[in-house]
Image (cartoon, rainbow, N blue to C red):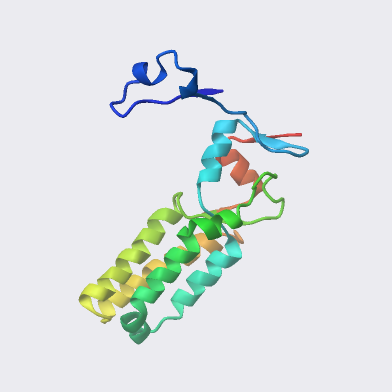
Length: 184
């Protein structure tokens, strides 16, 4: 696979113009081991996202549910930072990648903060925290916050019948969502 570097003005003619230095050959699979996912473009897309084990995500959200009205008033910035650190810290998420060179764990349960339905739910919680900051920790803003955090938890743990929420990925859902095939 070859990629041509494009100049700042958007044209590739001068950038590539017969200059071999501007073309990069990248292998389709850099994975060393007994198997790998394909196609490579889908793998790259899935790897670019942030993945978090379900248990860690649920623990973070559970802590947010325990915040009292007074906690929200005093700790809204801390709660917002904790939510961001758990779901969006690239280094922490990369360290817990569910498939860093291996197949998605057979019994692994992960969530991706950047995909619906989780992404809009996380944004709603952040907006609710902002409303607490702007309007104070009265009943209206706090109720809105708790409703959004409840919805976030529902997306993670679901109901009793399902056993997990709509935002949770296990191996089959992950491979189907990204149209990935495991090659031995």
